[in-house]
Length: 306
Image: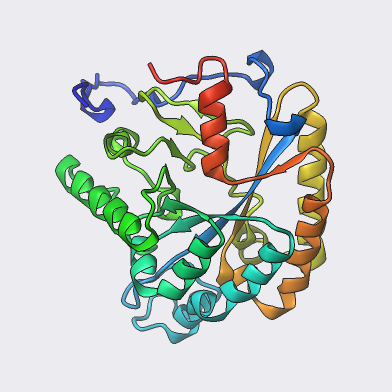
């Protein structure tokens, strides 16, 4: 790309404005039409992650979170790739739902059996950083460009498919990230969880696709301490409201899952109950974030790159 990075524009002595996207009230937009007349496009955002053993991270018990190693919390997270994901795959298969995988490149390198299972099921693969212990927030532009190139190249090598989408570890970006991703051929990000519809960013060829920090097993079970029945009711309420909202224009529903959380044995049946409701609900397109982005870019008024 020859245009200047958004982050390199002169900044006056005033608070920085958000120039990545424009304000667009959902009631003023052209209608979105999903395939088959569906009202809601639904995808599972499946987080396949690797955590470094020498850094603190997402924890179930804060009392040991700053220790290295921290067997209690590291082992809890490590349950995901070893056990939890395989239980989760059973539910996805039962309901014929293909995952949209938020893949750390380190996870792709370290857990080839998971990648093999996903390739057999035609999962979508999104870049999710190198691991969930490394953020690019303090990188220089050249460092970030090299980092993103390494991540995307690694995922393409391990999965056999170049990722089209990005979600940063802990949904982190720099002001440069979307433009650098566009240079690498990616076309959408999930980090800006501010909408029920895809929309165009002020970066040529780049979209934002809805993801959720609310309909997210870490937030619901770990942060809020909710129960399995609570989870099922929340999923039902989310879908029913979005379906109602979408009478005139389609909506997106994402369900964010982490195998070390939702893959715990006592939660398994509740995920299955939630997916049963979704899979049998009228007017729902069971799809992937890749397909949502591609359909929107192809059909929505004003969505094409300039």
